[in-house]
Length: 315
Image 1 (spheres, rainbow, N blue to C red):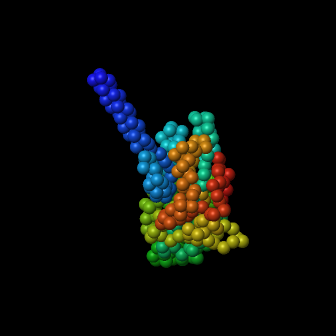
Image 2: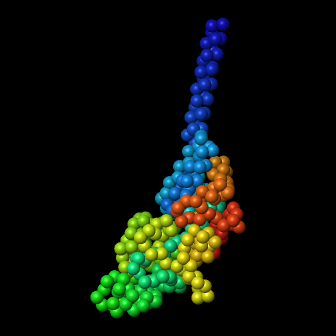
């Protein structure tokens, strides 16, 4: 009897130990999301609310840029990638070669690329055609895009206001999602002209533009403090539209675009549950309430899938 009693104790201790291991493993479950820095504040806010209903799940959200998203999926460093642009053909081939899987991208919010200049710049708007000329270096002077003679001179305090004034392009690093949006929507697929003025983040870029009377740059709506934001005209038959959560959401602003969550194949498990929450009315309300410049999806958009690039053809 005494041996049987000890056997029960040992067996009970073993099961208790196994149960504690299972509980520890459950407590250590992590859903990793990596990618566009632009999306980090929004996705973190969504992850925080989602985590309240999943106490055994840690949702880890990290940046690194849109270009870091697909490699993280392929290398199993993340279950979800955040991209502030559609995936490229190269990324599609990379994932298919490495994993034999198709990337599945879901639009989860709408954003806009803001065109910014110094506060004293006399320009109020630019057309897509003018932006193409500026960022492809077809024009090198503010005088060539409609600035009144002497206008830039007064802005920078020149003694001789009738001199020409070169355009200085302030650009984000190459892995910025804004680069891809400008190239696709304003430059029609062509690469941006090179610039020696490159910045690691949107805030430092905006600060530099604010201090440069001849400067121009672009970035997200949340990083435009201290600068002048220009309206953008789609074509000669339309009025220039300034970026705002409303014009971004209804995509009347010409540089409005989707923000995506991407998956290696159709999402499953916790990744699918998180996506469902993000697209739910509760999730979209969180997106719309944040002071980030990012807008919730239009009500008519629905949970449209974008396995390649087709869903982001522009407004």
